Image (cartoon, rainbow, N blue to C red; front, side, top):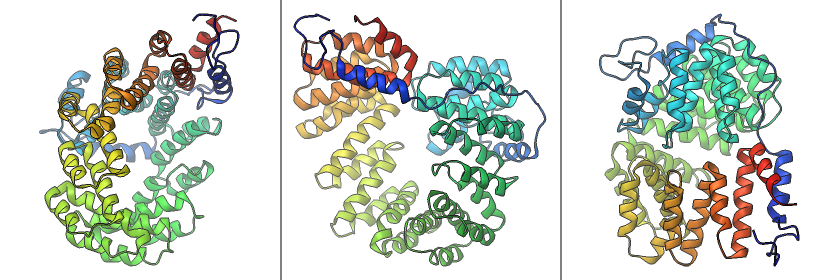
Length: 500
C-alpha cells in the first residue's frame, strides 16, 4: 500500500479507518460461543430416550436388501462409497435421508477419517454431512466430538456443529448434555444446542422438552415435541399447545399438530384449525393441513386453500401447490394459469419457482417465463442461477452463456460468478472482471463475498492490487468484516501486521 497520497477512507497511518473500526467492533462482540471449559464426561450409559430415538432413525433404511438395525441401509462402511451413493440419489428427499444416516455404525476412527474427507467437499450439503458425522461421533466420544466442532472457524457452521454433537451426546446421556448446555452464554449457539436437546428428549419426556424450549429464546421450535405427541393423542397435544404463550413456540406446536392430525383425519384437523384465532398460528396450521391433504387429493386441497381469506390464502395456496407440483408439475402449473392475473398470482408463481429450483431448475425456468417482468421475476432469476450452480454448475453456466437478453444477463451472471468462487475464486474473479457496468460490480462483490469466506488472505491480496482506490477501500472493508465474523483471531493477527 503506498503511503502517499492518503487514499479516500484511509487514515494518515495508511490503514483503512472504516474497516478497522468495523473490525474492532466485531472483535469485541462477534462470534456465537466458544466451547465451554467444562469437559464432556464419558458416561456410556444408554438412556431410554436414546433407544427410542435410535429406533426411529433405524426405520429410515432405503438401500435394497438393507437389514434392520443400526447402519442397515448401507452395504459398506467405506465412507467415500456411502457419500457417493447418497449424493447421487435423484430425489431430494431420498438424498437427505441417506445423508442423515452417513455416520451410522461407523466407529470413532472411521468417523475421524470421514471428517477429513468431509472437510474437502465442495457441495452445498457439506455442513449437514459434518453435522451427521459429529452426532455419531458424540455417541461414542462426546468430548472429542465437541472439541472438533468448537474449532470450526465459521460461526454459523460452528454453532450447528456443536449442536449436532450435543444431539449425539444426548442419545447417550441426556442429563449430562443438558447440564453442559445450561452453562453456555445466551445467543444463537445456545439456541441451536437447546433445539438439539429438545428433539432428543421429545419422545420420552415431552413436558421436560417443552420446559427446555421455553428456557431458551423464541428461536427454539416445538415441532419435534408436538409432532410426536400428536401421533399419540392429537386432541391432548392441541390442548397443551393452546396453553402456551403466544409466539413462535406455540405457532410451531400448532403446525406440528396440524400436519400429524391431517395424516389420518383431514376434516377433524380442519375443524380444530378453524377454532384457532386469526393470525400466523392459524395460517401455519391450515398450511400444514392442506400440504398433507394435497398428497392424497391435491385439487381439493388447492381449491380449499384458494378460498381462504386474503390474509391466509397466499402462503397456504403456495405451499399446497408446491406439494401438488412435486407429484404432477404440469397439472399444478395448469391450475395456476387459470388464475386471473393479479399480484397474488405473481407471488404464487414466485414461490413455486423457488420451491422447484433446487430439485428441477428446468421446471423453475418454465414458471419464471410466465411471470410478468419486475422485481419478483428478477429475484427468482438470481436465486435460480445461484442454486443451479450449486447443483449442476456445468449446466447452469451453459444456460447462462446462452442468454442474449441484456437484463437477464445482469440478473444471473453475478450469481453464476459468486457460485464459481466457492471452488475456484481466481476463475470467478476473471469472469466478473470480463463483465460490464453494474453486472461487473455486482459479480465482483459476490465473488469477493465467497472468496473472503474461504480464503480471506487471497481475497485481500487481489483487492490490494486494484487501482480504483474508492472501490479498493470498500472491498477491503467487506472482506475484513467477513473474516472477523468467521475467524476473529486470524483477522486480528492480520490487522496487527499492518503498519502503524
